[in-house]
Amino acid sequence: MTFIEEAIPVLHVKDAEAAVAWYVRLGFEKQWEHRYEPGFPAFVEVARGPVRLFLSEHQRDALPDTLVYLRVRDVDAVAAEFGVTAQDQPWAREVELRDPDGNRLRVGTPSD
Image 1: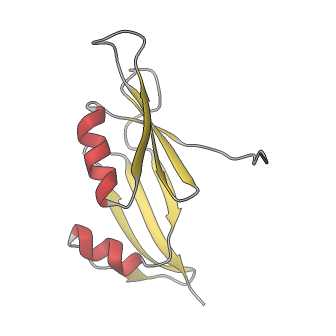
Image 2 (image 1 turned 90 degrees about the vertical axis):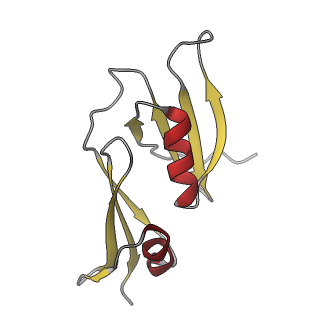
C-alpha cells in the first residue's frame, strides 16, 4: 500500500449526524465515526473521492466560520443541488456554501 501525505481539514459541528447528511448532498460519504464512550462527542470522517474532511463535535476542535476550498469537476451540479448560482471568477467558476454549523465551503471548477 502506498502512503500519500495529505492535509485533512477539521470542521467543528454541533450535530455530526445532521452534518453528515448535509455533506452527503455535496457528494461526500461517511467513512467512519469515533466516540470515546456512548453519548460522548463524535468525530467523523467524510470523503468525496480522494478528498477527506473530519467533522468534530469536540468543542475545542476548529472554530465556526472556517473556510475550506474544494475543487470539483462540475461546480454547476453542486450549485443546482443547493439551489444557488455559480459565479465566474478569473481562476474558477465558484459557489460559496455554508454548512449547518456556519462553516464556509468555497467550491469551484478551475477555469480553462
